[in-house]
Image 1 (cartoon, rainbow, N blue to C red):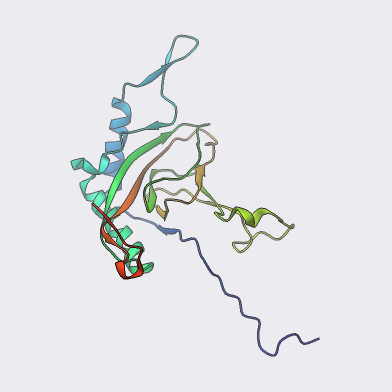
Image 2: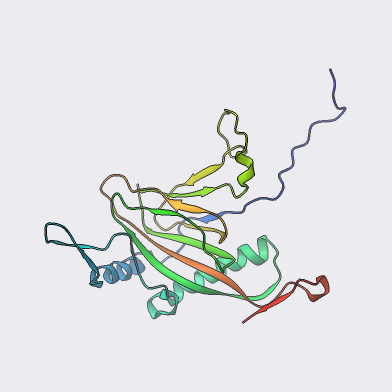
Length: 217
């Protein structure tokens, strides 16, 4: 039976964009040293049942690293990478972008980050300062209705509802802030150090002639 005279065409529509880059920051070792020093100097501990002290679980720095002199150049790299994605690749029109939050994460074996998004921002990302052979980052299909019927299938990027991306030292991932993501519990005995951030548009966004413009200061 011939059901069409031409070749069946496959079109992928409404994509969810995730970008990655290896060997992202040339001064990786220096910045990792700064993060480790912050972690070591943080006096926030939890008191265990046996009376000993332990560093707080799921340690995170203050969310203003981008304002620190030590992170100034790194923040500039992040801005440029996000501009390439938002303006050049996705062709959004806007005046400028800025980092709203930037913070370091330090996970010990057994620790994890539960599913979450980054509200009030348009783009987010993570840079792995020290993450070899540790848990990566998982993303869930934002179309929840896609899980109404899920036949058994050979797993591929075209039918997956959850994808896990590998953590690699000096790699970044850039993704929409609304995309649900999480970090599985760390296995083995290695720690995982990373830096995360959020991006927001500033200035004129959209066009008033389309009756859907905005201005962000």
